Image 1 (cartoon, helix red, strand yellow):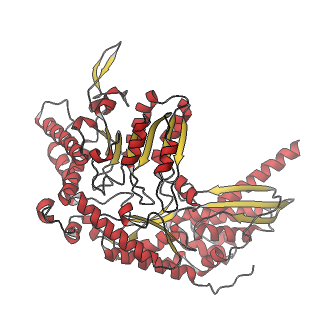
Image 2 (cartoon, rainbow over the protein chains, first blue to last red):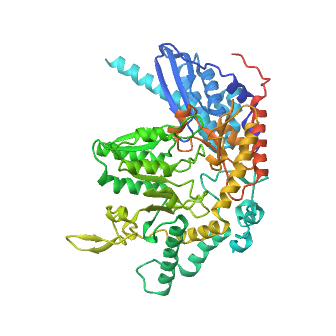
Length: 151
Length: 428
């Protein structure tokens, strides 16, 4: 085990130069992911267009792993359909807590850089935080749209 | 005996190398490096004398206490009650009957909240605490305030991490029934003027509770100096085992309070119609207590008494002064709490610009350094400072200036990792 497994250049790059960091005007759904044990926080907001995540932004404060993971996540799902985003979240969870296989990430090299986090079990929850927030946003959107459809 | 080995008569500094040999864990390695244990505010390590006391109890005289007439029960009872006398002497209590054994400081504080506060705080009354309290000295009082219609008032701390007695004078009113305050902050290291605060509280007719979780292990604490009404502290932060806390209360107050938990030991007699309660302190110790760990806590008290708390304090002032100086010299480092070591204990919380405390603790761990990162159960304090958390080094009798150097090395290593402008360029 080496610190280099954790603090890969790609991760440090996303931490220091986060993509899609900021706020959205009039987001369709927003949520706050929070880890009460360590205080990591990811604020997530999305703009939807039909079934597609048209725009996504994150804020909040946290360690390099949670914030880099958030940055990578927004890049990974922006412009994609909700089904694809859900699948990517599932694949990422598989990488972190399941088999450790990166097969489902379809060659997303940035996300694969987070693979080393597995060797630091305490930090896995940091990497997962933004993805949990993403799944909550998706669920909220789907339940809101299905209720609107019924009404 | 530690007494002979460390030479109480010698008023000079602690013999740290001799002390270190008493702590088996200090010889282990973490990630191939010697363990540098700087998380003493969370829990201290245990000397072999404490570990041996546990082994002796379980190997030689394990028995339930107070009720048995057999030899083992008598020996266990003597040992258990002997620690109560030691604890009373350690803090200068009026007698062992004022010492109640609990699980930890948290339970001691809750005991007061569920007994004394339940009967003495009503609608319109006030409870005064500070914004540097541990959650265990916040949440029970929030509950009391909510349940009983009282108001919780906060004493703020200033930029130097200290409170202003003028604020205490203003906030504590004749409606105030309780002032509950940490003696030494587990984040800022601040040593609060609890004696002066107690004087103000008493002048307004309020009681004074002191959270001594961080002070009793590290400072000479004598009740005659504190002038408080309750004092809570834990064994595990002062070389003893986990699972043992102490609540000291003034005899007259403890006698009037209702019992806490109901069950065996705390009763005098139980009939269908009515139950009468045991005398102090057993009235507050329902059920079989943590006998083995209380007995081992006695070995911890012996160990600290032999060293002398004045010398423990002097050692920590030296380490804190050195750490404040060294860390303060690293670019980007912000240290919290009083600058003057006489106003603070051996707890040094800090942040490093651009590096989250968890990342700092991770890098330190790789160097074998146990550092705490986060809000340290003081979210009100963290939000007051508008920071998500800090890294914290906290010292004890076995720490050395060389370990402070190792800490500074880890901070510099973290700065190297995080200040490198990454060459990989990814499309934005």
